[in-house]
Amino acid sequence: MDVPTIVLVHGAGHTATAWDQTRAELRHPSIAVDLPGRRGRPADIAAVTIDAAADSICSDVEVLAPDGDVVVVAHSAGGVVVPAVAARLAPRVQHLVFVAGLCAPEGATVVDSLNPDRSAAVVAQAHELRRRYRGHMFLPDRVDDWLAIDDPKVANSIDGVNLITQPVSWRGVPATLPRTFVRARRDRIQPRAMQDRLIANCAASQVVDIDTGHTPALAAPRQLAGILDEIAGTAAGQDSSGGIS
Image 1 (tube, rainbow, N blue to C red):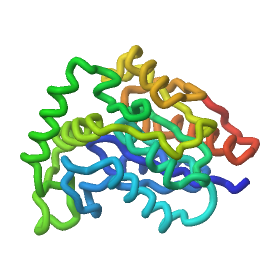
Image 2: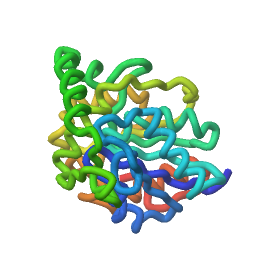
Image 3: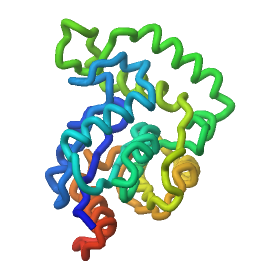
């Protein structure tokens, strides 16, 4: 089996640069992608669909890692997108990794799964954000063409509300595809009960704890890289050193 490339998908309020420190520690080849609506990926940030995001990620993979197996890793809200990525890139995808990753069962939204009592209010908020931020991007490369959002907290709110109100589809993803949930022990955004629900939502076959807050890629990049290298090594049938910690 090929040595897989690790494909890194950022979460809400971030860009691909969130993975820079982790990539520097990885032994496996890796690429980090920007979701649409930020930097060089033109789109209204508040109106990005799961399908558009998955298409963008797959296009980057085809250019940057056109051959061989891949392990797809998503942080937080990026987890909503990766089932669609796995379906499009099958059978290249050998493992899905959700780093404090949001996800939902087939046909459901994250907000319906985690907090159904607030679903209608959050959907209404998403509609209002799409109206208010039409023509906006997070840190666009060309500000002449777009209205710029430069506050990560604002981008985080827009990204999160937009993605958690869209139905997730697992169609085309093999039920046997291994999935790991990296659980952040000190995550103040995802309490343990929520993490347990997310683990069930993505049907994780493995749970790995990491002693950080919500964003291990920034808080403990070396430890996270070790976890990801271990998973990628296992996917390739390698005798990977370092171990999961």
